[in-house]
Image (tube, rainbow, N blue to C red; front, side, top):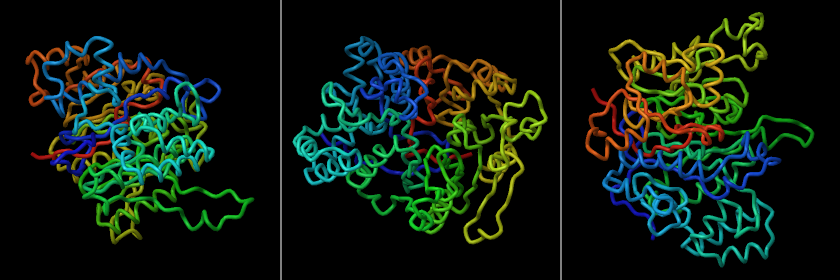
Length: 482
C-alpha cells in the first residue's frame, strides 16, 4: 500500500523547531552481514550485532519519535509491543503490523512503494545492476521480484542467503543522503563508493514517489564540475562531493556547509551557487574542518540544542590545542590545509565574504542575529572540555544530537562527561525507558517537557559511527517563535 499523506509538506527552517516529520531508515538485514575484512570499505569500524541494535537500541529511537511526532501510533501500545515477536511486527517495514507512520517515515517503505510501478522498477533495476556490475540474467530476475522483497534486496544486497550486491549499512544515517532546506531538498553527492547505491535509491524515491510530487521542481542535485571532466587519466583532481551530514539549516535564511573528509570545496561551491540561484537562502557559511575520520561530517563537531545553546568540540578551533609545540595536543599533526577555517557568503555579495575566528564566534552570531536570542549564548563542550574525554566522547558522538523540540535532545548514554556538562547547564537528564513510561502514564507530556537530555542506549549503535542527528532527515519543523 503506497504511503500517502494529504497534509504532507516539506518545510525545514531550523535545527531546533518542533520536529513534525522526518525520514529514517531502520537497521536492515545488510547491517548484520557486514564482514570484518570489508567493514572499512563499507565505512564501518567494526562489525555490529543486529538484534541488539534493533531490539535494544534503535527501537527506542522509533518509540520516542512516535510519541513526539505521531502519538496515535504508539500511545497505549507500549506493553503490547514489548515482546520480541511484537517488536519485529511493529518496527519492521515489510511486516503487516508495521506502524507505517506518515510522520516518522521509513525509506524502505517509500522504496517498496515506487517499485510497484513497473516502468520505475525496470529503470531502477537496470541502474542498480549497471552500478554493481550485475549480469543481465540477474537483471531479468530482479524485475520479476515482488516490490517489497526487491526493496529489501536493494538494501541488504542479499536474495535469501546469496550475496548479489554489497549491503548499504550506512543507510541508517539518513541525514547524509539529503537535507530539506525550507521547502527544497538538496540531494547528496557522496564521496565514498559505499554510499552510491543509497543515493541512487533516494533520488528515485524523491523523483517518483507521489508523496514528493508537489516538490519535483524543488529537488536540487549537485552536478559534476568542469574540472573533473577535463582532468587527464594521470592527474589527481578534487572530486565534486557533498554529503548532507555536512549541511545544517540554522535559520530560514542561513545554511552551514562543512568542507570535510566527505564534502569537497567543489561540492560546497556548487551548493552555494544552486542555493543562491534558487533563492533558497540568503547566507551560506563554509566551515572547513580537518579531513579526518573522527570529523567525517560537520555534525560530528557540533549540533544545536536551543537557540542560544550549542554542544561542540572546543579543541577543534582552540589555537592552543592545535599548536604542534603543545606536547599533549591531540591535534598536533594538523597540516596547514587542515587548519579549521570559517567563511560566510551572502547572496549578491560573494566577493566580500565575512570571516570568523572560531566556532563559538559564529554560533554566537547565529544565536543573536539569525535567531534573535536575548539570552547569553551557552556552549556545552564534549567531555566537559576535559582531555582525554573531549576527544573520546566526540568519537562516540557526544556532539551529534537530534532536537525533537527546542531544548529537548536525544543523546547516547555512554558519554558521561558530556552528560555532566548538560546537567551543570540546568538540563534534566532522563533515560529513554523511564521517559516512555512517564509519557505512557501521563506523568509527562511531550508538549510541556523542556530543557531535557534524553539518554539512549548505545553499546552497538555508537560503534556504527553516527548519532541521532545522523540518523534523521527532518522534513518539517515548526517555525521558531518567541
